Length: 403
Image 1 (tube, helix red, strand yellow):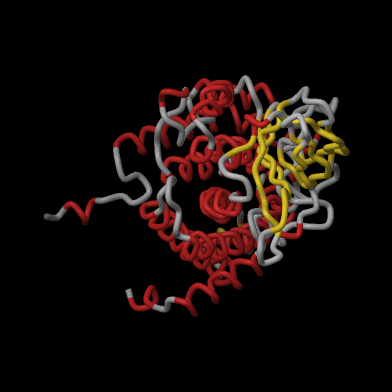
Image 2: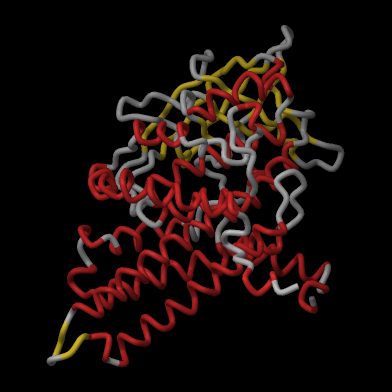
């Protein structure tokens, strides 16, 4: 009965440990050598991204019958953590594809939709994105103005613009994503609230095109961010996902996985920053001794270690109890992202401080991780939205405080 003493919450099974080792090797050999250049050039490494499909990572949570690995939330977190240790921008493209598009489709799509799209998405032949935010609406998803109108011939006509879409374009020529998981308004319910429905948009559909590519971003420059434009975009009825007006359920359930994955990116960023600042503090000397001997440096390293270990434990405990199919863990998916993302930014900041001028330049990585970390406080729900959700959830049910 002593198994609990040796249980590793971050690698709860041999299969999880193997996934971590495989991705860590891939990161060291393939991701790390290209990370700095692709950040500088604001280029998405499409060729390297497709290699993730060869390893089964693009469908990490997808049933094997569709070309996926059939694993769980913990496995998804492991991949996001390990990729972000080296290149969070590249990892963000992975998250937008594997969690926001592919997992969404696997959980909410029809059998026909899954059979039609998932094999190509899992292999990397198709690149996917999720389109929810708009130029004037982000956190306020119910305020979206993109509309889908049912035509007399049974097809849908979609009009609107989506903004800040990761993987919205896949190259410098503005080639739009192959598959878009799109949210649009299809009506108003009896209480006057907007009804949101989900549609699968395919590259080549009439009226679907890419808009501006967003350049000169603070961070996450190795992933493409763009606007998508829908002008009388004709979508056949079989591309409607689930029931009409039922997409808030899709959206909220998948947001849990997104927030956990973003927290996992924070863990990867923190681990790399901690490793680099600790190594540097042992090598750099001042006044005849390594700078790790100075109390100021010890505070930066000590606090970073404690925060890293706390976020890691919180992340993988949240993974353990979260179901891909049912959701229902908003309290902790919000909580772990709220804590981990801000802690990661602070740890990256401390790493720069420890490394001084070397930390301030791109060659030494932590400068890039500091810039990348900021997006984690915004994307997938802002810090303010998490604070609101946690407060409301605890007001409705304070029992988790006493568990």
